[in-house]
Each structure stands twice: as C-alpha cells, then as structure tokens.
Image (cartoon, rainbow, N blue to C red):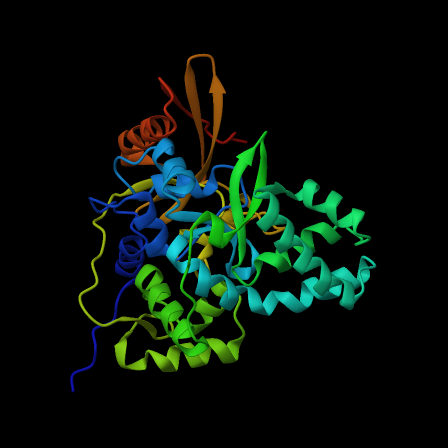
Length: 370
C-alpha cells in the first residue's frame, strides 16, 4: 500500500478552519453552528454569540437570542471542563452528564471546605430542584436565600457549587435573564425532554462529533477539550475506530473521520471572540499561535483574548467600544496585516451588522517602535 501523503502545516490549518465552519458555509442557523461545534464556551459576555457570528453569513444577535429564548434550540449550561457553554438543546441530556462527571468530586470537596456536610449536599440538591419546579426560573441569590431558610449553608462559594452540582446531570440549566441576572430552570420545563444516552454510546457520539468539528486531531486533544479522563477518551476513540482515517503530518499522526473533508481557501480573516474554539479546541496552540505572541493572547489564568486570525494564524488582538452613533473596533496587530487590511475592514463591519450597530469605525493601533 502506498504511503499516505504528508499534510503540510498550511493545509492542516485550512482543514481545521473548515471543520470549525470559519469559512462560513451557507445556510447554517445559530442552532446548526452550536450543534456542529458540540458547544461554544460562554462564560464571557457575548463570547459565544460572537463565535456564532464568525461562523455564519447572515445571523444576527437577535437570531441567537431568539434561538435561546424563544425557539429554545440552544441552551446555556455547564458542560466541557465544567465551564459554561451554549449547547444544542437536544444534546443537553447526554452531553452535560458525560462531561461534567469528572468535575463533580472537586465540587463536593469544595463544599466540604465551605462547611456543607455531604449529607446536606444531597438534601440541598433536592431542594433546588423542588423550588425550581414550584416557582419557575430563579436567580442564584434567590436560590441561596431559600436554602438558608431551610438551614442549608449557602454563603460564599457554596451556592456556586450547589447550583453547579444540581445542573451537572442535565436536569437543570439556565433560562431567561431577569433584571440583568441569569436564572436557573428545570430543563424539562425550559426545553422539554432531552434524550439521555448510555455511557458507551455517549462516548462514541462525543468523539465523532468532536472530530467533525476539530479534525484532524488526536485523542489528547479530545481529552484536553472535553475534560474527560484519559481512560474514557481512549475508550471513545476505540468505539469509533472503524470511522477514523489517519492524517500524516510533520509531527504526530492525527485523525479525521472517513469521507471527504473540506478545507478553506487561503486569505481568510476572522475576528474571533474570547475563548474561541479555534484556540481552545486542541491541547497545543503551536499550529496557530507563535510562541513569541503567546502571552499577548493567552496571558494566563485561563484567559484567551479576542484574536485576529488570518489564513489560520493569530496576527493580533482586538477590542470593541461603543461610541456615540458607532461601534469602534480596535485592532492591535502582532505582525503585519499586509493584504488582509481590506478583509479586516469587512470583518469589523460584520461585527457591527451582527450587533445591530449603525456604523463601524476600524482603528489599527501600530505597536510602538524603539
């Protein structure tokens, strides 16, 4: 059998760009984008919404809000790595229990440190579900106040870990926002029934869906992205072995799903939000982020700044400010942008279009020279 041709770095980037939908295929709704990516990290304000924008042609912020609050085809929940994500409503019932499970011991340990006995934790989780069933959407402070009335410690970090644990099996999720505060609801009341899957089927589903959105990649990448234990990731990879095809690179062998995989063309530029999947979805960022620029984009503490990605590599960071009658998009290049300037202006305009802002000004801040 002839040796498989080696995929060069530029081609690998373009394969991943297409897998991530950053080439913006036509006809994708907000729910389609979220479903394809399996989930979009949503702990920072507007991050998930802007991540959907970067992967769609005509979707607006209103469309995303409609999908979450009216259609309820996407839902905010704690998922991969125990962090807040937008996920497809139909995935909540299997995805959250699977990916949250490794983080549960940590929350139980933290509750013990906060003075909540193990026996009280179980009672508190039942009380949370009962009050949500009886009263509908409640904010975290409202839940804490009701727990204290029933002599459950809910001060400090205790209420965070109690509500996280209540949601970690997929029965509780976030609902509407009330007076600027997110509320928690019973999933069955908010989105109806979300099917559960047996553990093996859930592992196989996660692995195949991850590869569809992140291939070519390796089992270590799935472990990093999902937060699952190495044994579970190896099992997931084994369960879909007959669907995998190796991809030879200058480094280790990677894998993708069988069938034709598209790749993006050259010259594509995107303004990506904080915690975007393109920088978060693999164990190493070396393919897309030069080491000399790492701290400007990933300063530590789990933060990943908004990034300017051109032809698959990070070329700068960016920010947004709302000025009178216009949106100001400021770009801080890390390297020269050259021929990408016109496409960058179009991307800035698209951020304004997505948000519904009447005008956009692009400012490019050149680094100071010595």
